[in-house]
Length: 111
Image 1: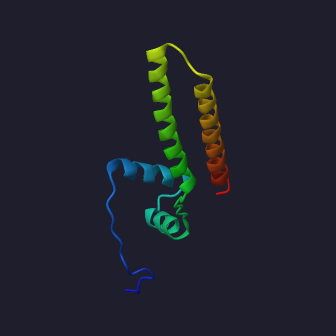
Image 2 (image 1 turned 90 degrees about the horizontal axis):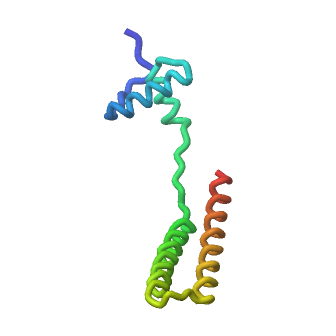
Image 3 (image 1 turned 120 degrees about the vertical axis):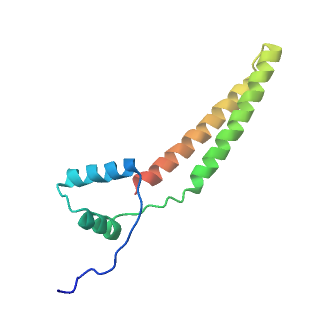
């Protein structure tokens, strides 16, 4: 018997849903050769690990904004009035958040 070119076997488990997704990918590229497909994806596929500290900063900003907004809403409910400073604060925080979102989208578009 001739020696195999590939003599190391790899084994991994998938769920039924994952198996169906893999079968769907196979049919999309027009092959039934699971081994060739998995080798190609494992060797030539892309792995993207996003390191976006800006996203963590944006989430923190949104949490603070939410807290400030709750405090303003509580004060409006208690007094029946909204203050110009509160509206300006809301507007500034929204601008900061929007700027952060644009920055993250810009970085993602570079991928």
